[in-house]
Length: 453
Image 1 (cartoon, rainbow, N blue to C red):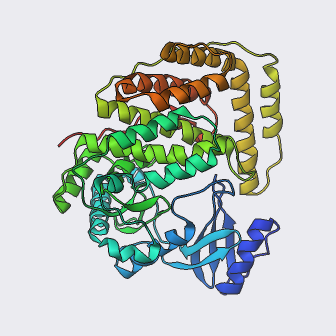
Image 2 (image 1 turned 180 degrees about the horizontal axis):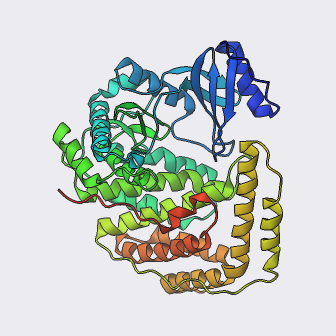
């Protein structure tokens, strides 16, 4: 039976993707937009199942652009590393059109422990194979080639920080200013080998027989310290469990002969979490309409909280949680509850429209929490800045500017006090995000430790 072409979509963005596929691949017989914070499409075009990976939005910038990301796929194809084959690039909206690999994600959902162990063992073996590829193999991807220990350690972090400085547009943001200073002061000097690194590690597909069908998602990649990829797996493990990470790293060490200390893991955990902060915190002040604001805010707060904890663990510092905020409403708390109820009553539409509706409801719920607890949070934040700097400020903006100046002039002897300060601030922000959308789970999750072996 011959599959019938789907009806052209009415959404303008969907229509552009649909029309490009017809013109460049072949008849489109299945077309589904994924209901998530980033646009993507599952399609069948020219008789082949494809995945179309879309952009994050006009106000988002990445140290690796989508053309470089596509070239990484080509490098893997040339060297026998399992990954989706890329068939082309859609210029508007900028998308990568790639093979839809068979299989599923999240090895934590595998019921058979033997199959689960097989999948994870095969995955870490493929990672070791990737790290054996010469850096010259990635020349066409135009990834900067690091030489010194500092360049190897910071090769992704440096351009991410540059994007942050540009996009934050002069706004004081002492949390990330402190992170950048700390990373530069704590560069591991004994790491001198650069490899291809997918910092957002731990992403792969596998089939029901326990075979890995391919690695996926290389948008946060660079040439750098291979230990950074193992560190990044801690973040992936928070939502897609990877099992005993200490055992996984031990297997990697067995395959490669590399030796990776816990302190090195904590450095690169802080580094990759900082990349998330560098790239996403500016969106909290200048977001595009298509971006899921509340999801990004959850990611900003969650990954920054993990960053500060990694710095504390690197230093051997025990963090102390602040008291939870208390109810001090600005007034008319029912307004938010009414808005949530109103939005949730909107009729069902497409999967993407339903996602947008639910995202708006989550944001309305968050605005209600700001009404209820915001005054309490602000008072605690101002008191903490005063305790640190010795100056009491009237507004949060004044306090941020003063703390930014204080961080710029502070030396490493103040690191412990600043770590505690930012931990307290992030814990309050996590409290404010409780129940605010699917990504709010991050507020209650800590990263799995990777222990010394």
